[in-house]
Image 1: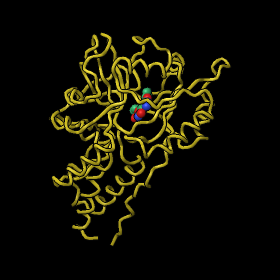
Image 2 (image 1 turned 180 degrees about the vertical axis):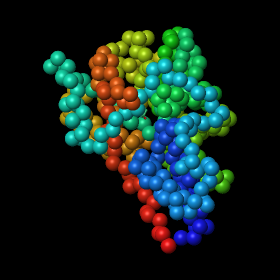
Image 3 (image 1 turned 180 degrees about the horizontal axis):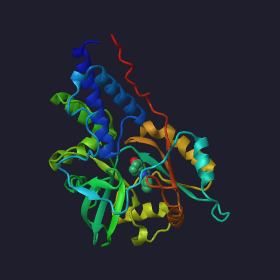
Length: 326
Ligand SMILES: NC(=O)c1c(N)nc(OC2CCCC2)nc1O[C@@H]1CCC[C@@H]1O
């Protein structure tokens, strides 16, 4: 390989790594598994080691640390926005359930939810009025995207009750909006978005809210930062309460009392997945009783009372093959 070819290959690797890092660090919406990122990063390191002259100061190999977007104010999450542990088989899901300490002999009740493939957001209300919205960021620090979120119709500007509450959920782009947007981008000569999740992330990262306003984003809310203001004592009851407050919640949730019910729900939505108006990348299974959620608590990153069952990837990630060394 000549130095010129190495330079070209390095540029391609850098643009991929920068995009993936943005998705991961800024919107918690990685479009590739960490292993793909790591292998590609190593290829860039090898390439730059073989051809030191091609290293650029802005190469991912030269910069470390924070990648929140310039132009957006940082918002600390007083109550961290957790992620979810993943399982990839029913057997692993059963292990998760078996690991939960037995609840004084009473079997756990679970709430099954579709895992919406968007990006996590947090909405804060004071006396029932929407005052601030942010991205999840790294779970501790997000970006203030209030102005962009105000343009999304499914986000209530005023709740049905004048309460103080912080609600978390997923912002997503419906499949139909994604297809229309990519057609428009093709017409305008812009690069199409790879998937609805990236399109949602790209649409929320706009500094100009008018651009966001035209992207037809929507939301499904599914969690509150602090349960104290709610009446319900279960996850399923909380969803119904959020709906009564004015939030959009996904209607396909279902309470399950045994593993067979969970298996059935997973089978049903594995079938229905392609017909849904929005993307899902799995199923979230949560302990239904909020008091049990609290007592089970969380690790630094994920709750002990919830797990994501991930669908098998639709197409295997194409990993860049080893570069031919001449
Ligand atoms: N994507 C989803 O549909 C979804 C969901 N239905 N429910 C939760 O519950 C949270 C609550 C505390 C930890 C996980 N999280 C979801 O998505 C998470 C948020 C951050 C990373 C995942 O996208």
